[in-house]
Length: 205
Ligand SMILES: [Zn+2]
Image (cartoon, rainbow, N blue to C red; front, side, top):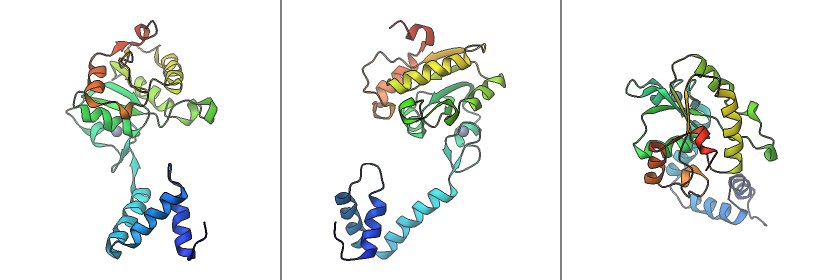
């Protein structure tokens, strides 16, 4: 692409770094911003730099948070004996939207994927084990995507936690949901949490 302005080229190059955004889309977005009020664009860039600079990860569950301990972990209304293990913050949002889960979470920060060079040490696995050692947990629910990475992670995590005297469940995965949790509709996801099964049973599906 030949640009008439270096400023334009730089901005397009930055947008094109975003996932799923090619040069053409990047150019369209940048031109759109040029048509906005300067104030609005200022607000847009402020929101992004504030997001990156000020966001925190909950020191308990590792979910994205504005405080060092997130609202869910610090709530007395939640059942702290129930931990739902998910891949990332999108899954927490999806499960929260079902309004059917009252426990707390543990956000792994990804899934084990040897193809992408992501191993257990890249994820919040040790901190999960540490949480279980605190002896407050009665049940752990694995709510991971029904993909190869999800299954690999589930298998590994089960090995790590099976020695604890707790119930280990997985969300009902027999229902045809297309892989990624975040795309599952709320009713299906809510139901699959309510009808969760012991991990062992899930292996003989
Ligand atoms: Zn938290």
